[in-house]
Length: 301
Ligand SMILES: *Cc1c(COP(=O)(O)O)cnc(C)c1O
View 1 (tube, protein in one colour):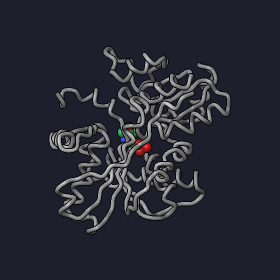
View 2 (tube, rainbow, N blue to C red):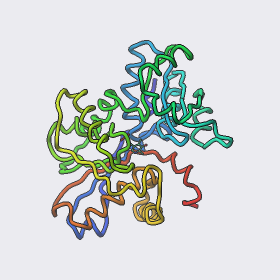
View 3 (cartoon, helix red, strand yellow):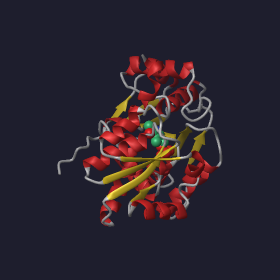
View 4 (cartoon, rainbow, N blue to C red):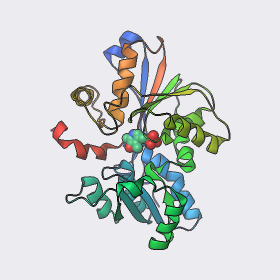
């Protein structure tokens, strides 16, 4: 099969603030990998799909909310690689489906809805087994695609970087992508995650556990910043929306408000506050997720 994926270029960003603070900023454009299977969601799916094939599983089952980038990407990847896909969606079946869910269905993903209470227990092995009894056998991919195979995929981002750098930054949800970066760095340089969710210690613990599961060791050369969640997951504020619009106008690069917009807002704020020493070189990751803009139309028209 012809490789449907494009390379992810590394671009240098030009900005007055960067010049003034003598910071070099590169942008790793994982959003350009594929129209639908883009960003960190492809990085995290890649070795899960290999693993499913290896285990002769033809059905993928995964979880997500009604606007989930992971559901969207998994549905598209399943179609591309001829897997059957099942998506278990948090909450009741909506009267009006999100564009994300409509897209997933159009790709052939079968959707089931799970009430929020049950959804909170979804990863319990007993519940996964009971799904197998109900639906038949499947390859299980956790919510957000985050597991040890996701770490293996995200690690490849580091291998692709061909410039000198001091820091690598990513937005954080489950921490799977950050774990991949930390694994790839092998103790050198610094990784910074910008959490899209309100702070809690489980995120750092998750990253440590994932890194350890994949590499066999833990590394301390990473931190997670919890100062730029804008009220919590998927919450926005006018200054964030304005920042995304200005960024688009200046750099001709689209960010989205759930992850990449918050990270860049935070990163520029830290640069303005001299968090980084002069002469630092920073790589940031565009983790994609642009389909998520469909949930924020009223802000961007
Ligand atoms: C899912 C997602 C993230 C969060 O990645 P984790 O590996 O869960 O931390 C970041 N950015 C975008 C665009 C995403 O879709």
